[in-house]
Image (cartoon, rainbow over all chains, first blue to last red; front, side, top):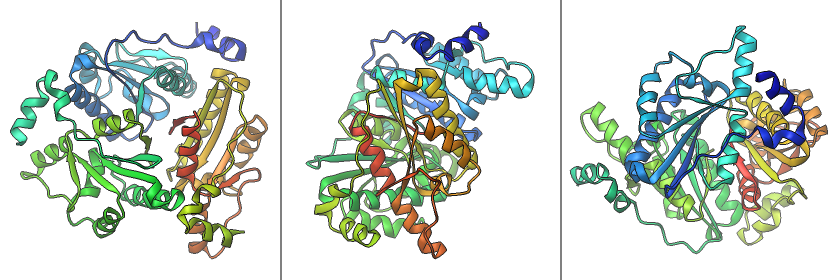
Length: 143
Length: 143
Length: 143
C-alpha cells in the first residue's frame, strides 16, 4: 500500500488519483485548521480554536478538519497529551488528517512508522489536503 | 453583558447574533492581519506589515484590521511596548480587534479581565472574526 | 534605482506602479508559499513543502512562488545553508521572491545591502506580493 503510494506519487500523471476524498458537507461554514508547528502550545491552541468555532457558529453549522504536516504531525501520534481530548472532538464531528509524507519521514528516522491516535485519517500530503479543501470552498486558518 | 455573551454562545441557534459588525469599506484592498503568536517579535512584525501595506497601496486604497487571539492578544493589552505606535496607526485608519474568548481565559487565570489599549475593539471570537472578514472578501495574511 | 523606489513608495498615488509583474501561468494549481519566520527549521520546511507539492500535483500542473519577508528573508541570502537546494528548485520551475522593504531594513542595520541567492527576485513588498498573487487566483499556504 505504501509502496503503491510512492509509485503513484512519482508518476505526475497519476497524482490526482492519490487525493483523499472530500468530506460530504452541508454546513454553512467550512474551515480547515492547519498545524505545522513543533510548539506544543500551538497544538493545544489549534484544538481550542476548533472548540471555539463550534461554539461560535453552532456545531451543526460548521465543518472543521484539522490537518497536520511537518512537526505538527506530533499532535496526531498515539499517546500524545491531547489524544483523549481529540477523541471527544471526533465524537463532536471534528475530523483529523495527518500527512503521509511526514509519517514516511518519521518512519525513516525512527525505523518504524509511528501509530496515530485512533480515528485520525492519513492523507497523501498535508499541504495538498489543505489546498484541496480550500479549492472546494473551505477557509484556511492557521492558529 | 459578559454573562449574556456566554448564554448566547452556548445556544448555537443564536450564535450568528454575536458576530461583530462588518466595517464599512470603500477601499480596493481589504486585508485582515492575524496575530496569534506569543513571540514579541511577531507582534512587532504584524505592525510593520500593516504600515508597509499602507505605503504599498496608499492608505486610502487599503483597509486593514489586525485581529489577535490566543497569546497574540498580549499585543492588545494596555501598557504593552507597542501601545503608542498602535494609537498612531489607529489615527491612520487601522483597526484592532481582540478575542473575547481569550480575554475570558486571561481573566480566569489572572482573577480580573485585563484592560485593552484604548481604541481596540472586542470581538466574540478572534478566529471567527478573521473568517467573517474573509467571507466578506478580505484577504487573510498571518505575518 | 533604489532611490527611485523610495520616492515612488512615498507617493501613494503611484503605489500600483511598483507592483512586480504577475508570472505567466498555465498550470491548474497556483500556490504562493510564505516564509516570514526566523526559525531555520521553517525555512527548510517551506522548501520541503514546495517539493512535495510538485510531486503531489506533478511539476507541470502546479506553479509555486516562495515569498519571503521579515526574518524569513534570511532564506534568500547568498551563502545560506539551503542555497544549492534552491538553485535546483529554480531549475525545476519554482520561483523565489524577497521583500525589498526587509532588505532595506537589513541594509540599514548592516551598513550594506546583503546579496541574494542567484535567481531570487526582489519584490517591493513581500506581504504585498502574496496578496497580489492571491488576488490573481493563487492559494496562500504558510508552512
